[in-house]
Amino acid sequence: MIATAVMALLVAAGVWAAQSRGAAFLAGSGKIVQLSESRLAPPPNVPAPPVEPLRYIDVAPDDAVKINASIPFSTEPNPAARPFKLKSGSDDYARSLDCLAAAAYYEAAAEGDDGMRAVAQVVLNRLRHPAFPKTICGVVFQGSDRDTGCQFTFTCDGSLARIPSVSGWKRAREIAEAALKGKVFKPVGYSTHYHTNWVVPYWSGTLDKVAAVGSHLFFRWQGWWGTPGAFRGDYAGSEPVIAKLASLSPAHAADVQLAGDQTAVPIEKLAERGAKQVKIVSPGGDAFVVVLDKKVGASKFPALALAACGQKDFCKFMGWTDPRKAPKGFPIEAEQHQALSFSYLRNRSNGFEKMLWNCKEFVRADQSQCMKTS
Image (cartoon, rainbow, N blue to C red; front, side, top):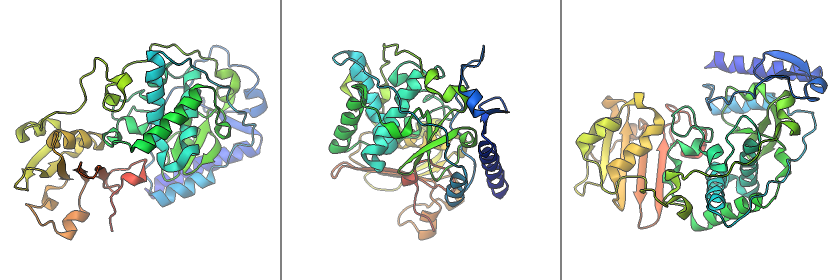
């Protein structure tokens, strides 16, 4: 871990040194070019830069903050993006509105209105860039069918199992609607990437850091691909129906069977979804002790929990990847709680629903998803 952190710091230092000489890395090329030259015209016969999977360097949150602080903000101009306007009244508009609102809410509701505005702006910036899909829902849910390919973490990490508050969802839709009517969030400029301050994506040292909004840092591609001229893509329309939003958005519910099981999956079937062993530990059948298969990936645990709980109004799902540390039943000892790998608690009587991971075992981009451990 220390060696990795040092490597990242060296990359950051290299970026700083290049910028201090009036130069920058040209993304994807390994070359250093003068900033003034790199922003004059599109590179001839060069395709748009690849969209890298969202993968993180394995560093502790405190080290990540230090690494991120060592990467300076770009001194190049940071012009505001052009307004984006989409005519209301169509199915495409209704679907795009809720996709954009979902991105704003699940990625940045904790950051307040400006945090949500910044995320919405990144979505629209991506839509206009040739490297990304040409629908809003396509941008937001790009790669969400793969564990390592999703571009917005909420689309594949189980966050959508959390039902937004009425007021929170209303505000996110208001912000999304304003963005679709041409409202521009100027501070992030033409940013196409962002991450929270306590993680370090592999790409963060090769892009221009242009803004900080709350705990999020915003980046654009270096060279010509980060300039206004690169953002020339047109909106394609034909927004896809996103099944994952069916329970939240009427626009995505048409002709879609609601995601999630209506009844609990039998215990013997849960092994097919990533459980090595399951034990119901309450008389009412609403609490589970589970030995999880670490190989299936942390992003699959929420689906396993929802399958076990079905439509129960109250459900407690507790998973351990180490079978030696899993309890046999209640009460659960303190040291067993500390060894938890994943937990899900639902209580519909008071509207509570929460999924948590042991972030010492599984890195999460959103620290609110981390269990408190000693």
